[in-house]
Every structure is written in structure tokens, then in C-alpha cells.
Length: 85
Length: 200
Image (tube, rainbow over all chains, first blue to last red; front, side, top):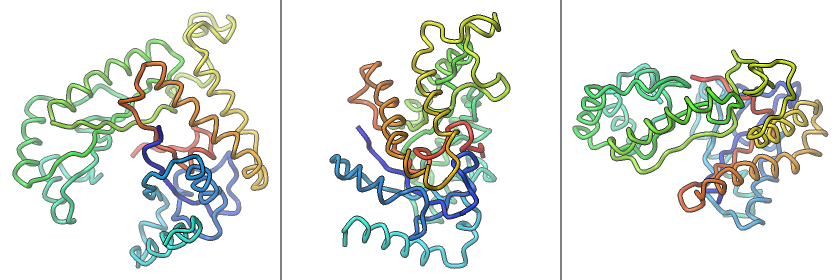
């Protein structure tokens, strides 16, 4: 029944489950703390291979001087983590 | 959503950015957060004209109402707004709507009270009809009790199941399997629903 998977990472080491909010949400990176790749793998293992758009609300993402490069890097990491090419 | 632009200005911006389709998320001059839609006939007409003039279409409408509230008056109000939003979607020629279940009550109404306990603060806090919400609330309490990265990872699988299962249960309850799709959000699977969101 899942039609879409929103992905965003959290890297702030001081954030806890109780304090994580939208401003913590960045692009998915290697130091992601909330297991985006694990969740995507679990979904795919369950037969869910739906589109996975980003939902990064952190101002640091929006203020990036080279957002396209950041996106490409994150997309590449996610693809590699899922064994996609 | 470029909320600093008027509805009439929005389509031109979409074209300038190279897009043809938009998701219309909440904005104060159309489907606003939590409150009665501000979709007056003249406003709908002028917005439709602007969309047509620029060849832009709406892929989905995104209303946000408190339809998971344990307060019956709040829930019924949300359902009423939802019906209006569906009519607006039809009027706008939009065949897809997108929203979220996990909002619970308005923060102004408290957090764990039910409709029954509104009238009697000392009454048992689990009246008939509130089962689903309280099930979700138990999930939230488990989430809120975790405080370290290791606990995030240990309990993720449980939350993952909880959030998705509740959404699917709700859809199945209204025989909506053919009409609804669930959006899995990796962040909201990890964090307490009541803390994760700031409208705007």
C-alpha cells in the first residue's frame, strides 16, 4: 500500500528522539543517525520499490552554495547503499 | 510552496522554475492549516485562470486537518473541512490528495484528553471510539522515552511497524485500499508525531 517514501537524514549528534524536529532534517549522508538505508532496504525487501523523494527541511540544506552537488552526492550514496547503479 | 506569491502569481513561478505540475500544500489564502478552507469562488476562478494561462496543472492538493483528534468536535470539524477540500479538488480538476494522519489534537486542547474526558476530567481516559488514537498514543510514548542513538536504532523496527500498520488499519477500515496510498517517511518513523512538525 506504500506509494512513496520520504527520506531525510539526521546528523546532529546532540539530537535525541525527543528533540528531533524538522530543522534537523538534512540530506541522507554516510553519517545518518536514523537509518534511512536500513528502512529503504527493509521496504524493498518487503516488495516496496517506490520513489523516494527527499524531505530535508534544515536551513543548512536550503542555504547550500551547491545544492545540486549535494543532491547528487546523496543520491549516489543512497543508490550505492541499495545496490543500485 | 512559494507562499509569498499570490495564487495568481504562482503559476508563472512554476513555469520559470521549469515545472508543469505542482503539489498545492497548505497556504493561508486557500487550504489553510487546520481551519476552514478559504477557497472563495472568485479566488478559485482566478487561480484556475492563472493555471490555465501558464499551462500549469495541480498534481495534488494537500489539506492538513485534525482528523486524528481524540476530541470528537475537533475530529468532526476536520472531516467537514476534508469534505470541502474534496469538493475543491474536484472543482480544480485534481484527482489526487495528500495528507497526514498523525496530528492528534490541537496543542491548545491538551494532549492526552479524550472527547469524554473533556466533559468529565475524572472519567476513565479510554472511551469507546478512541481505541485507535490511544493505540497511536502508546506508540508515541514509547518513542518519547528513548533518548540515545543506540535506543533509536534498537526501537526503530518497532516504530516502523507501528506507524505503517496504524495508517493501513485506518485505510482498511474505510475500505480505501484501492483509493489510498501510504507515504512512509523515514524521519517520522523515528520521531514522536507531536514534536516533529512546525507549520509553514
